[in-house]
Image (tube, rainbow, N blue to C red; front, side, top):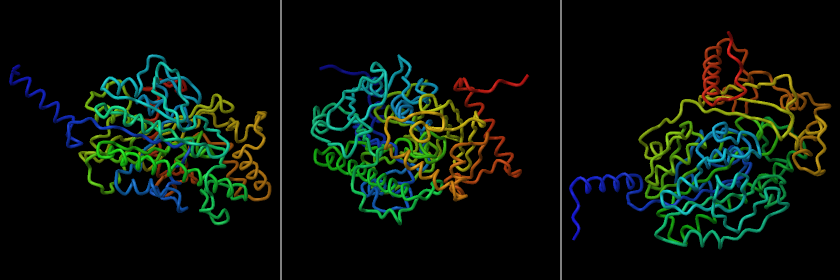
Length: 466
């Protein structure tokens, strides 16, 4: 019989205690992540949606888990958001800092990090990342990869179920990537809402077309919510719920004017609800400032690994364990318009209450090819694109309505600096940059933003004065 020395026994005990501290058991937890597509957090029930019936399953999960009120993406576009989530690195660090850009070759993603800890790592649905060497997921059939799918795409859960149950002795990480609520908005059941009474965001022009498309958008959010409900039932059916951490995210904001493709809150503020194994089923809300790059370090930490020091993200386990109430002092944002329209750069920072946006090209036209590409000569191959038809209705109303004209002007032209009090003005309609009493806050946010850009080796950092 082999005997172990006291020192080795102590080390083994410490290891077991560390891996079981959160979960009350030594078995590594499974991770199931459900990722929406182009959904603004404020349109989800538990985040204060003024339109009911959108997310009953997500709301139920929030009542049993942890709701992160200040979770942010660094760049509100699909590819950079996913690269940040999967690498634990911000866009400038991982290289995917504009839409459709590739992550730097040699970067380690969630696949390599968790595989080294013994996990199977799979993904089904939308991808929107490259190169394959950085993201060698096991791809699972069943969910549509086409975000522009016309109508309601079919979905199958048999591949997902097989992946979960393949080896009960090996933990898994599975990411279900929905295509809801990416445009076009023509899927799901919109009868839950009346277009005439649906509540629109304050920064939208109120038109018949806007109301119709916004109602269809809510129907797609409900489709994503139904997928969350089906995933929970699948975990319960296979007796996996007791050892699976379930995480629901809504990606970046809605693909509508003033949301996705900006640094406004409707674009960068993300829903994030987590339900962890062996935690009592009571609702908890945290206001800690967190970012998508924090999620991968959290998974590594929970799996018993050492979080690499080169990641931009930090483990959220102290928040989850209730050992901490704060996480970051600031969250930072960027937007680079390279393939989506004429070149335009935004940088921004928030302390949780105030947000400063720095538009690096204030005299230039802000345009997104799928919305107002005609402003710079872009000819869209899709004549009936929903978001463009929505925006054209805004332009028509702006011709005779001053409020509509102000919103359109706000969308197309931005001052160099914008400062907002998110507590008083969550839809960022009242620029406070010229309020003398806020000069100290303005200068504080300018300084930390410049420091962050310097640390990120942002090539759009202005030259230092000599």
